[in-house]
Length: 555
Image 1 (cartoon, rainbow, N blue to C red):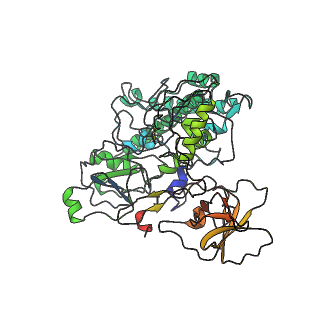
Image 2 (cartoon, one colour):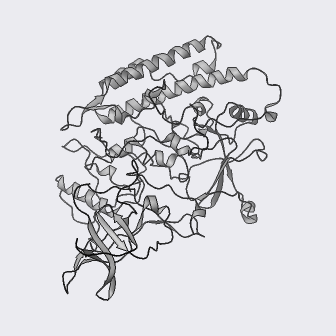
Image 3 (cartoon, rainbow, N blue to C red):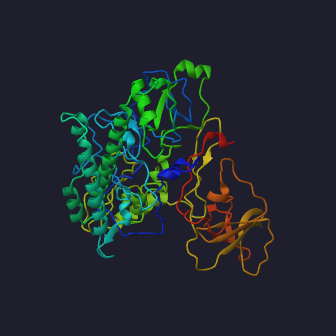
C-alpha cells in the first residue's frame, strides 16, 4: 500500500487508541513498559565492507553518546531508524517460550524484536528486512489481523473480574490468514530444491495448535503473550514469501553490474536492515528490492577534531528522533491500556511518556497503594524505586490477584502552594535546555464553571488573583489551565527560553503565587502549572507527547 509523498514517517507506524477508550483488560503481573532498555547504549559496529561515500544521504541524524559520536543515515529511505546493536547470540525474539527476559505491556521482546526495529543482517532470518513495519489502515488489507491491536479484540467477562478472552471472530480471522499464508508457502516449495536451506529455515510458527492455545486463554497476560507471538509469526511468514519472490526475481541476470544500476527509493512500509558488515552485492540486492537500508558511522578522533561532521539534527541517545519513539509510548495501545489500571504500581513508575525518572506524585501514590494493601511500614528507609526497570519484575502475586507493590520511598511533603519544577532536558550543550511539556490534556470535565484568575499587583508583589464573575477583567491575553479549569488573564506573554510549539503543547504558567482576595489576608490556593491558548485541544490530541526536537530549533 503506497504512502503519500513526504508524509511524516511516524504516521506510518502510529497505532491510535483514543485515551478515553478502556477495553477493561488488566495485567495480573508486573511488566516492563514497551520502551524499557531502548536507552541503553548497545554494542554495535560501524564497519563497512564497501565504499558508500558516493551514495546520497536521504536522512541523517547525529547521536552524541558518552565518548562517541555517531552519524546514522540512509541512502534510500526516509525513515529515521533506531539502531539496536548486536543481539545476544542465544536471544531469539520469536517463538512461544513460556517466559522471556523483560515481558512488556505490548508483548514484544525488546529492541532486538524485528517487528519494530531494523536489525543487522541475520543469515538465519533473511526475510526480516521484508517485514511490514506499520499497521494497515483498514480491514480491507488481507493481513489486517496480523497487525490489529489486541486491545480492540478483548471481551471482558464482567466489570468485576480481570478475566476475559480474545474475540472468537478475530481468532477465526487469524486462522484464515494462517491457512492462506501456509498455502502460499507450500506452493512456493515446489520451486525450491528438496535440500534447500531456504525452505528448511522458513518460519514455521504459528501453527493451528497455537490458535487453539490462544482460544483457551482467559487472562490478559496470556492473551498478549500468545496473541502477539502469533501475529509476529504471521508477519514473518508474509515477509518470507516476499523475500523468496524477490530472490526468484533477482535470479535473472541484470544488464549491468549492481553497482551501476539505478537504485529505487525504498518501500518505507518495510522494516529494513542495517547494512554495516554486509558485502556490497548483498547490500545492493536489498536496495534493488526496495528494502530500506541504514548505515551507522562512528566518527574517529581525527574527524571530530577537524570538524568533519555531517549536518543534521543532533540527539543524546539512540531513541530520540526516531520513528519508534512514539510507537513505544504515546501511540502504543497496550501501554495506554496498562496506564488505565491505577492499582498497578509497575505501570506508575514512569513519566507520562513512559520513561523515567519517577514523578514524585506517582511515588507518593504508589506508597499509599502499598500501605492500603495491608503491608505495614517497616522501620528504616525504604529502598528507592529505579527510574526505569531493566530486568523482568518478579513481584509475587498478592491475595487480591494483582502483584504486590514493590517498596518505594515516599518523598517528604513539599509546599502545596509552590508550583512544581519544570522538566528541562539538554539536547546540545551549546543550546538552551528544552522545557519538556507534559502530555496534552483536556479539561477535567466539561461540566462545571471555570475559575477566573488575573495576574495583577497584590500586596506590593505580582500574584495571580482570583476574580469573581462580576469583576471586569481587561487584559491582552487569556490562556487556560485545563487541569484545574482556570482561565488565566494577563497582559505580557513572555515565554521561557526552551518552550517550543506552545500553540499545541502549551507553556508553563508564570511562576507567581495564587491568592483569593479576602480582605487584608489573602487565601492561598494551589498554583497552576501548565496552560494552553484554548480551552479545548485538537480532537485526538489528548495524551500526545512532544517528540524531542532537533537542537537547531532551540535558541
